[in-house]
Image (tube, rainbow, N blue to C red; front, top):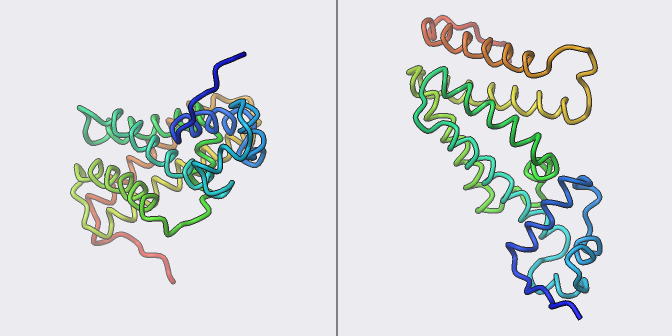
Length: 199
């Protein structure tokens, strides 16, 4: 008889991450997770608040792990090199953990304080990276939003198989990030005269 696994939240989340990365977030269920952990489903409810509770924990873990990955890539870098580094780290994380990343963008409770703190940590990391360009406070946030849109948009299209043309995806990504960086320099050199969109 095999020895029963001693469950805790970290073990449950590790297996759940493997499952969503392999099968997708929408295929995750308490039953499937229990089967893969070789336990009965009621055992999981001692550690989780149902499927939504599990997805919430995955969302928090996904955001935290993405932040850790980006932070490590930024160490010892600044300016353009740091922007390229965190952007590359972002796309590599999504490629390695597509299901976990999906979970980090589709959380049941947006008001969860731990989730909000994890999300804020990523924002602050990008703000710190952009400090090198000496942007005004509001413009720095605009640039954070812009970079987030580029990274999330590109990786989402890639995960959906949307880049069908026979061109190097990595080269496309590099061109996109370099264009964004050129835009930062343009804004930084003439921020007061930057064109505003009509509301």
